[in-house]
Amino acid sequence: MLHFPVNFPTRLPEKMPSVAILLLVLTLFSNSKADQDFDVRQHLSTVTRYGAVKDIVDNSFVPSDFPVGCTPIHLNLVARHGTRSPTKKRMRELEKLASHIQERLKDAKEKNLSLLKVPAWLLKWESPWKGKLKGGELDSKGEEELYQLGIRVRERFPDIFNEEYHPDVYPIKTTQVPRASASAVAFGMGLFSGKGSLGPGRYRAFAVTSESRASDIILRFFDCCQTYKDFRKNQEPAVDKLKEPILAEITCALAKRYEFNFTRQDISSLWFLCKQETSLLDITDQACNLFSPNEVALLEWTDDLEVFMLKGYGESLNYRMGVPLLKDVVQSMDQAIKAKEDNQAPGSYEKARLRFAHAETVVPFSCLLGLFLEGSDFQRIQREEPLGLPSKPPHKRNWRGSIVAPFAGNNMLVLYSCPTNSSSKYFMQVLHNEHPIPMPGCDGTDFCPFEVFKDRIVHPHLKHDYNTLCNVNLDQPKQKPETKLWQIVVVKHQ
Image (tube, rainbow, N blue to C red; front, side, top):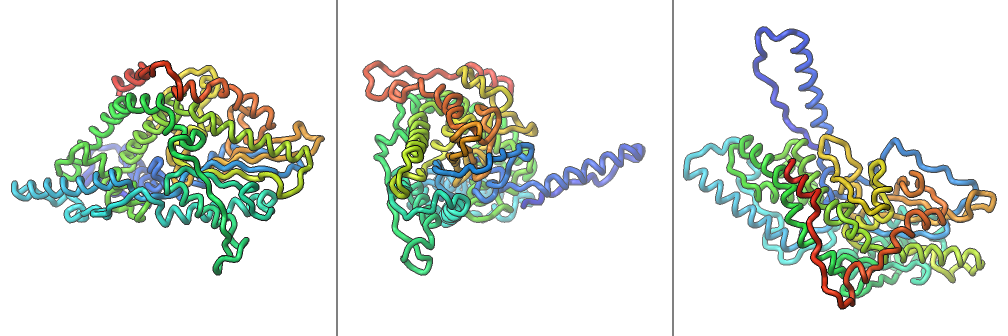
């Protein structure tokens, strides 16, 4: 937890009324307490570790009471890989930052400028990843996140994971990206620990399968969708323009605070360093400590805007290209219901479908389910109307990357069989990061009749065909997506 210093005035005006003095003191101490309570580990957008945020829930939401006798019969998991190291590109960025900072320090010394306010750690800082040749792999912290998740899922749903392991009963699917497949392995080791004969932990071997990157439209739909890739390339400059005023403001503030000539690129790289130091090295008192809590909140917001606009509700294409995954989830639950109705023998049918992918998978899937919306936004996306941007701090917002898709972030859709005297025979519950979450499409409940879920949430998306949407194997020329007018307007009013 960070503790930021508060600069109290050294001298108060002599004729200041006593009430005003009291209010000033109370305000200063109130701000000090708020700063001390601020935990930067929970404000790193999608670079947030799972353990820092998994238990942050909306306390105003009351999970549903299940009808007596309801039992889980099938589980779908869509999870992001765990905490990972920076990619080669980002490691090079940090090395450039180190070189640039050293150049600025040298220049300041040559000009006899004071460096008293520059934090001591920065004077000799080098990137912890300097000289590293590979990047992007699953970190040991990420392995632990998925391993423990596997254990908790098994303990929470003993009725589902009570069968002898078979790849057709518990299929584990992943993308071909190593950090995703390693996450699947770590999860499986936790899920099946004590179930085999390998080593002291009595582990057992299990299968992990994946599709080719070039054709995986279920877990890497974003990478196979040419329309989306064109849209993203065209839209990224608009995202950068939205960030500019915030970066400019914070650059100016830090240059004044530390009497050092930071550039906007320095600030952007230092913010990235803050996130990497926190998530991978458990260091919060270096790069993160350069920023005040308010500045961290604004930087987090700029990251959240990028996730919203390029992966989330900012453009319907972002999530509608994920319809193959939604279809796959529903199909698996339909098959589970058929197996139940046909009284198939235990061990002869699938009981859980477990998938491991990326933020670009989990975020669109959450949007397809209608999660993290405000007010009447669900009706707006059903009418295919654009949504406004997430509220800027200090205003509260539902859309936070650290909650929507932290490392190891996940959605679980659990299918329940209920007694015939209940309102429906089959229900489904959505858990986000292991906690029940309301679905606007199901009247704000987390526990929804399966047919209602299909009718209100799934079917409206099914009119969008992936191949048509993404210009896959089609002869017509691709149309270059246009930048939305509302995004340009927002930029002008920052």
